[in-house]
Length: 254
Image 1 (cartoon, one colour):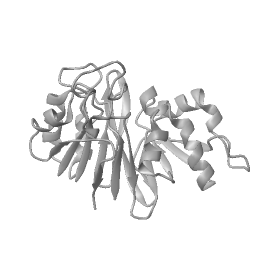
Image 2 (cartoon, helix red, strand yellow; image 1 turned 60 degrees about the vertical axis):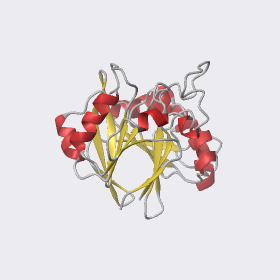
Image 3 (spheres, one colour; image 1 turned 30 degrees about the vertical axis):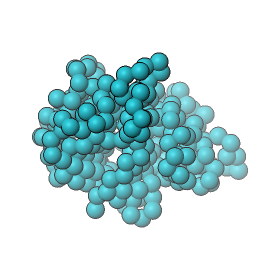
């Protein structure tokens, strides 16, 4: 199983428009962060995308993606949803409907705001051809167990996901005790880390490292970072087995 980090940036991306801070002015490509998303390639050839951020087209061209077989939605804020129309290209290539999975609220939001994408297959592929599926418990997808992980994002209830021994937790303000129990024995953890200072709807570096120490994955990668976090400077501050994620990074788990 391989996960590719399509984007590890926060809602504004890095470099941020009009900014000349060290990360935004950096020539290190690992400081160029598109909006947060990842794709998991299963051993059977199927690909599961996590979120459709507004940079999905750019990310797909960069990684030479030609197939997406399903999408898991963590929540429906713009930086995690508004690339949904770019799924059209994959529907056209594959000539098949793409299933979307998420909470009741997430699927209802997509139906309300992007209802034109929810269509049954026909001979017309000029629009996305998608179908929503409400989930609230572990389910089977392409012969793989997918576990939704309940998280808090400020006042919102959202999902992270565990697929095999990989877990993806973005936009986290706190992880309930019951959810921590679902995250034991991980090989790879992708974990929200917005900035150095505290924030109402996201954990900061100190909180991210605390959760990493509780979960104890073999490797933890920090994601959803603002331009305040410069790659090299942040890397020097991290303990063993915690790493700074970057766009295009590929990680593996048996």
